[in-house]
Figure: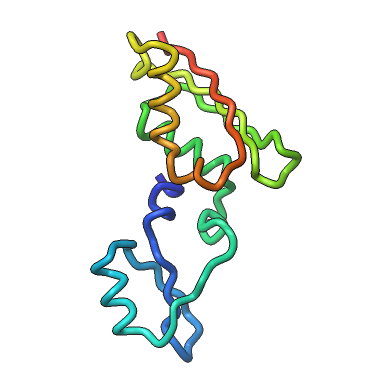
Length: 128
């Protein structure tokens, strides 16, 4: 959940204090944020780092929540740079779905995270 939440928040500086607030990311909140703060801070690292959650943990949490997964494993297979991941999901939600549909459910759940990747390998199982 934290990874999904973090992808929908905008870090905003409160000005001279240096404190950073997280605002919901929508066009209306962006407009009010621009009018009420002196500057917007651009974060050049994944927001999961602000919450001390690794990218792998963030994706695991999303899959556990959205697919009610009994087992999830996410591994960085890019040598640590976060460009490629291997995802294994065991979920009863996948029951009755074709392999293509199972992979699509996983990809849809991880859509914001996948946008920042070069590649992903997905393995699915059906929890009994």
